[in-house]
Length: 126
Image (cartoon, rainbow, N blue to C red; front, side, top):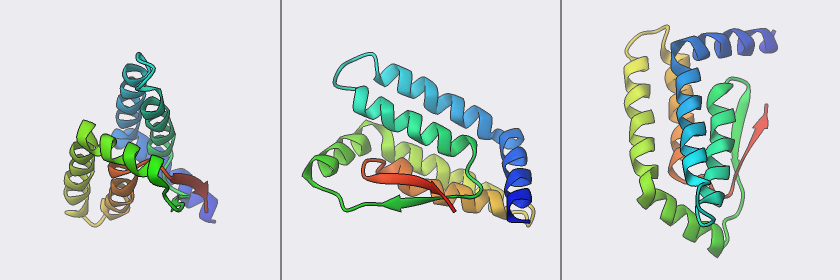
């Protein structure tokens, strides 16, 4: 039963903007990968794009962060992570206005953490 609900939620998610959001993450990842310094950031964009494309039935796990991941997350925040997190906050608030949109708002609120600091996070199926 949970698989069916996740499938239905993901299909509606894709229709209501999830596909475009994932495409934006992929484009951002490709742009980041143009330089050698940007490759780690591009890889994180691709990881987030997969999560954004199919979020229902998945959860985010944060591992202990070392100094390297902390430094990369700080650079990520200054390069636009805060802006992306604000976008998910805004989208979550918009979806939360209606009862039907609440599950989609929950997914946007779940994405705030990974959009703000992706290094040291993993995405796993529930």
